[in-house]
Length: 200
Length: 200
Image 1 (cartoon, chains in turn green, purple):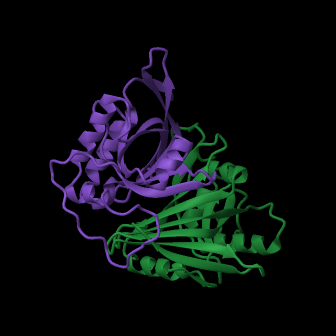
Image 2: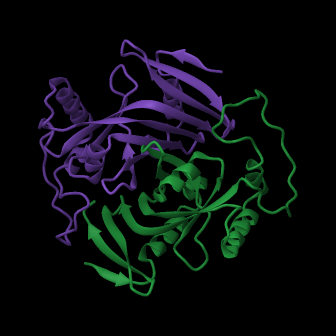
Image 3: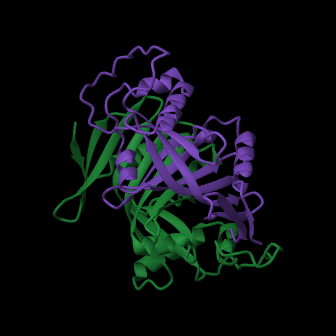
């Protein structure tokens, strides 16, 4: 049965899954797949940093020196696979990613980046002062714990990713139900979501 | 520090992780990223079905009617992201996938497929008798529980995927250590693994 709604119908299911899995620390972790510049798939665990205010866009913080930035600049499409280990629910969320780094020319986006920075813990922020992720370790010693003033704004390496979903595949392994949600752009720029029950 | 070994050095670390996370049911689940025929990434949770005997090749069972089969036939490269929620370890395993279905002409591969079938639970086997995964639900009723003789061999829809790793990225979030393992093919067809410590 297909029906069209303007608000994302999967968002409510996802918020409910987050609530019912809130007691497990890793419930905010999901896997983000991109395509590397070599044309091969890449896949890594990242942390859900909430929806962008008043939307169904998903926020992720990352280091501008990480490989995924090159991947996304080369091909902006990504798919999240989010499996909730307590409730046995899986969300596959496909969409286009917008990279917001310090050089962004849009003041609204720069403000979103700043907000994401201050919303992160001090420990998370400190990671962006460390050596380039993925490069060979030069020192055998762990890098010295740098100090960071809590009022200091986002450092250069801090990057906000915003995934704008256009397709969601929802699977509930307890009820053995599966649904797809497909976004059809309407003429006036508003989103319209079509949902359908499919075979698990 | 780079060094070359013939046996996969990451396999021991992975087996240890499996052991120390054995009390969580989902420790055998990982996310498999492929590239869809549309050129966009796809990502879903699948179940680890063990290493192929005497090798570092990773086995996955799947339905030959699922989208991932089209993906892999279009582009054989995939990346596994395997996060262990108890020990905070992540393995990103990149490689090429071999699809073994009922039409395979290699008798050794058909034997591997048969072995994978009989190693699965009866409940798992029954899934391959259900309606095509991902297609619209025609009936509101759940499909009738079919009977399956335990001695019946693999049904047509049963497919064995074998991923042959050539790159592994290991991250330990407790020790904050990260390593890469890269496979360099030697002249005689044997694998040679180079490991290196990299920045997390």
